[in-house]
Length: 278
Image 1 (cartoon, rainbow, N blue to C red):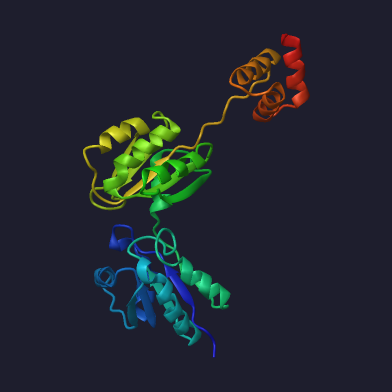
Image 2: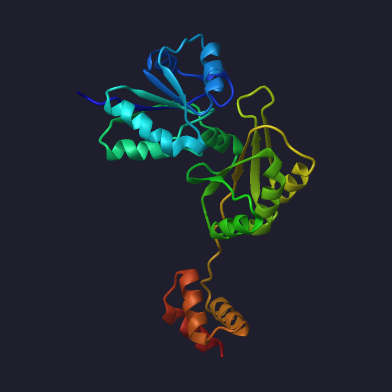
């Protein structure tokens, strides 16, 4: 007996009519539907004029691990399982990842019904570079852990996309400004594709001040990556940079090594520049 297929289905992030025809068909025909919120799933199906015929089970953060065992049993018994979260793609800051891992390990086919994504929607609306980007999900809630995460991203050159809860937005924008500088460009994308969609583009410092009064709705935050550093090439500039590092406690050898690495020049070039500047 062949196994069923695990189907990850992207759900609309705002408007029900953004759903694909394939999602409508899958909701009507899937033997098993695993939904992050069963009430929202039934509301979406009603909005689409679809009546699910399969078994609907809840599948959310708190029961994701235990439910995965049950759903894997359905798949092994030959039943397709459709996974639908409240909005966007399952497994992207939503339940789905653990079940995919289990299915892959069990040689169960996995496929995707593509569709709306808050990540790419916000990215293209932000006005920031789109050629390279990274998705960082939700920042940690605790201030110390959040600061540590942002310190790891201090040199990230790619545009960064975050999800954030509206009641934590002001604190996160303040932390981002402290880590990256208040002048770093960013965009707060609120209620994407919905009636009150709003895209606010400004430096982090301005956005943090704006958010202090409170913001409502689903939030996706896009932040500019670290601009490329200017490199030094003139011998006098290289020597001056070495002397500055020595002034704060580095040995000459350490300072020469750091300046050479940062400016992508051989250490001998920096060494000769220091000798010539004496």
